[in-house]
Length: 449
Ligand SMILES: Cc1ncc(COP(=O)(O)O)c(C=O)c1O
Image (cartoon, rainbow, N blue to C red; front, top):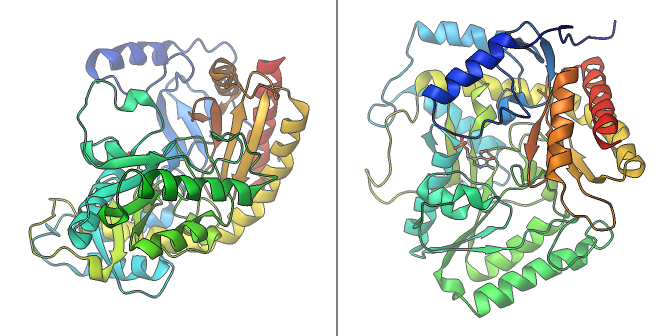
């Protein structure tokens, strides 16, 4: 039987409205959008979310790429959590030793491409994983500059914030952030400074980006021997689910190797099976020097961040970097189990890619306001524009689609200036996926007609 969403007929959302009002009285202004996403979650199960007014929704947001294993807790994760709670939860993993973080570090080292010896620094979030990467590359190379990409998102603390360049509001009013970062255009096939159609001419697009880095940064701005690293998301997440041409990272790595510049691969959003591979960089046949992870590594249960790096880059003495919760025993056990479950889900994610492709691609041909549809595995982005010719971003219509979808029982999140991400939990069944995709199509047609 086809799974059904239930938006209560006549539900006036009274409880939700009350709680949203209270929220803004007591909780700091952050990224909530009460106009388009007035969703007050009471509980969730599998891929289904229930709000405080009794409405039931299908989830295409995965709690911002965290709940890849669904809600509330995958049964196998629940089992290891309960067992571990009887042994050790917090064991001050940066001062005392524990076997759990060693096991997880070994596993993480084995899932990162390449055969270099790898070590891991543990933390609690994506931004912290990137902060550790910044300190690692600076102290290991003695070089201070880092190159990041426009449209990239790496966190909002003062170091990673300097790398982030997806929206100016993230940096508004808080200058100065960390010094020593310059940005290059990302090879966005749909929207780039050279107006190249990167789907038709991927080589041309990649060459322009590399030429920019070589000629406009390394030649005219900063000597290559002052540049410690380039940081990039393998597929930009917050920036709009933008997939660069397949040869981009291998060509970039060749250029970086020439100058002894390291490559940091930020897998915080795209890692952990989202794209049908454990790490998204595996689609690009490239071996990064450092990989950062967080979000879905925790199985949606407990925060964890990890910076997996070439062992020779390690901090030179104890105390150069540390924290309180890193190597948290419970978090490490959960992450180990999460990786095991995700490994088994990869073929399922690869199969569902076709379902998403077949349902979403026709929208690009049919609807004037759908400028681009791009995706791999269960990581899909749909870009909304005023019209195909101008490609002018249309955030109002994007927001309307998200709002209408929610009213019809589908949870979506925006990304980029005018894109929508469709990122269901990886455990979603084909029937459930089709239910969500049907609602998405109806919402697009209704909001753009
Ligand atoms: C690619 C990427 N890196 C880093 C971060 C920051 O992670 P956190 O919010 O856990 O600090 C995010 C968050 O969205 C992200 O998408």
